[in-house]
Every structure is written in structure tokens, then in C-alpha cells.
Image (tube, rainbow, N blue to C red; front, side, top):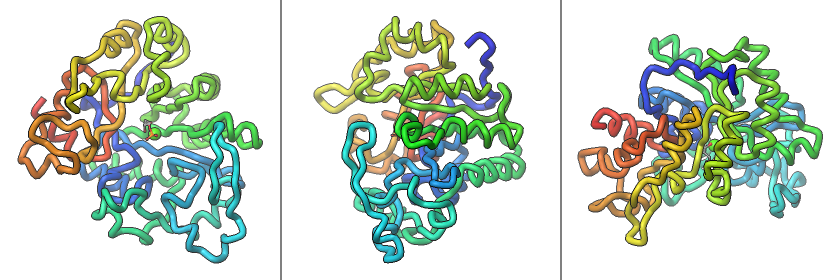
Length: 327
Ligand code: G3P
Ligand code: CA
């Protein structure tokens, strides 16, 4: 987009707090975002889904039982249902069947309690946050710390919500309009895996636009696809495997040309997701290891930064921040 600008951020590559500091607190809760600020994240990432009364809430999925206590709540037992969402049959409790008042009665729980027992200790303590509360937290944190902090909301299941009369992109634009954040210098970048959703956002907002590229969307990494993406977006957010493939030995191989191909077309590159417990750890690290236990944060985190990316999504903002200091 010719007129597109990138919101001002001081430190690069950006430390993007994926669902907040989600390695340490139940994801997408205000304490998860607050901890991310304390861990010096530059960017807070809320995934967004709508409620029945048109509020955007910070959840990765509209099905709520993986990340809240809804399944244990007798008052909502009759809301359990099965739907087809993006071609997949899903059974559970769905944000679009709850008002915001009802959602606020739920409490967040850790989605991966076996992997993240430290976070699971906070189960049942925190509400589900709205997008507006995340923006309030950002404003407060930016004032308090004097730092630029950006918010990077992702619209989930945009086409599905359109099909049931909930226009998530319009709801997002409305919030940005109301708060005076719909302009190219606003500390906001919006993202989606669905090209149509990114294009619709481009018609509604003037902030930075990110085309996400999923593990099944390798076709969006070709030079021709990047030419097309550059006509409507400002950045790509690819699965890390499209930037730094993992070899048969489980270790990172040679970087692909994706970063330079994207940069040649004026697109920023912000891959996802660095987390300490993933399988892609450098020699000497084992799956499940916490890199901080090794006394340094170089290794895999630094190898990712060396590819020339403009930011990285991470569940561990503290580790990425330290890796950036060594980089
Ligand atoms: O938005 C970038 C990254 O978060 C995409 O993956 O599934 O965690 O939203 P997901
Ligand atoms: Ca996301």
C-alpha cells in the first residue's frame, strides 16, 4: 500500500508478546499482558473473537472451554453445542453465543497445564479481557514506562463470523475509530491468516496490515504471492518454518530467502512463535528446557534474529528481550 506507514517503535527487532507473556500466565489475560510489559515486550498481541452483543474479546478461539472454566459452570451447561467452523466440526461453548456480561462471569485457565504448570497456578483468578481493556492497559503502560508499546490484534475466523452476521473487521475498526487510533501513526498493527480479512481491514483502517502465513499456506511465500501481498499489506507474519527450517536432526537449517524476498517488496517480516518449550532448540538444549536455566539466551533465539526479521512473536518475552541484547 503506497500510503502505508509503519507505527513508530524504538527497539527492533520487536519483541512481540504472543497472547501476552503466555508462558507464565493464562494467555490473553490482563496479567499476561501486564507481565509482558514488565518483561520489556515492544508489542502486545491479542487474538480477537466477538461476543453475541458485538464486543471483541481476547481469545485465540471462539470455543471457550480450552482456555476458560466454562465447562465447569452449571449455568452454561445448556449452551454446549456443535458447529462447523472453517470446515472443522467443533463441540463446545462459543463466544458468539455469550453476551459480554456472561463472558465476564467466566475465569481463564491455562490451556497447556502440563507444559506450563507455573501458569496453571493462576487458573480461575482472571477474567477474560476485552480488546478495549487491552488498549487501556497499553495506554497506561506506555504512560508509566515512557516506552512505545504497540498492540497487534489478530482477527480470528473472519469469514465464519461474517457468515453469522458478526463483522469482526468492522467491530475492530469501530473500536479504533472511537479511540482515535485509526491512523497510520497509531501504535496498532492488525493481522489475519485470511487474505480477504486483511483486505477488508485495509478498506476500514489506516494502521499497519499484516498478512499471516500459516503452516499450510506455503503458497503465500513465493515471489509471485509476495508481489500480490505487497499490493494490500505492509508486512507478513509467517510460520517460523518458512524463515528458518528445522532439519531432520531437529536443529535449525539454513534460512530461506523469504526475509529478503519480502524486504525487497517493502514488506516487514514478523514470524511466530518462539517459545522455550518447543522442539526447535539448539544443540545442548532439550525439549522442555528453559533457556534461562542455561544462563544465556543466545542459541536458537539469536539464530532467528540473525535471519533479519523485523520482530518475532514469543510466549517468553523475557528470553527474546535478553537474546536481542546479545544480538
Ligand atoms: O498472529 C501470529 C501468531 O499468533 C499466529 O498463530 O495461532 O498463535 O494465533 P496463532
Ligand atoms: Ca495470533
